[in-house]
Image (cartoon, rainbow, N blue to C red; front, side, top):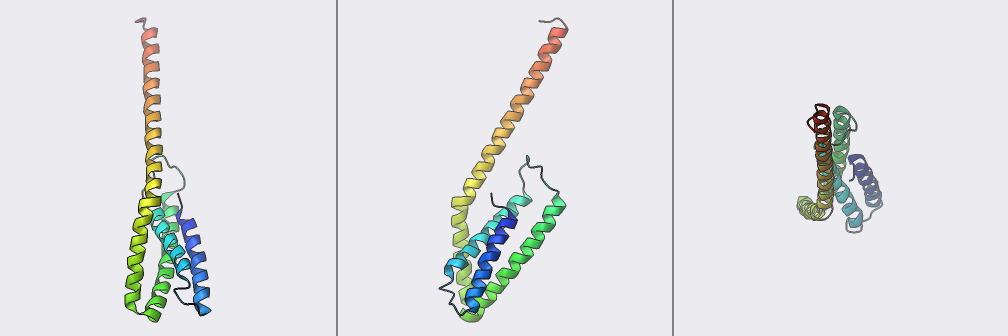
Length: 157
């Protein structure tokens, strides 16, 4: 699973390339691949942020306050990048162009959810069920072991 910091790093690098290209006079159509990479990283960040808010029960790393502050700072950075991209597209192509970008972004996010995120959720579910079954089996074995030795100590068998 991609973590929020990695997603922000990918988005930042795509944003910087996008910014350099646009300042060099390239058209947004020429930079569409980079814009798509930024959009994918933004989508990954939102998914990772959601996952960080709902961590698996077996995850014992870091404190909640540290990760909350970190995610907050990263979210603000992502929002600033998104705002700058929106301003550029709206300024050069009109407000309706930004609506088109949002529509494409929504379709892309839906597709990524079907492809990538569903696999991550399935993997997480398999890990959770496997760990749950192992813990339940171990607990049942421990109780059986204790009851057997207790009964043996009392001379019942």
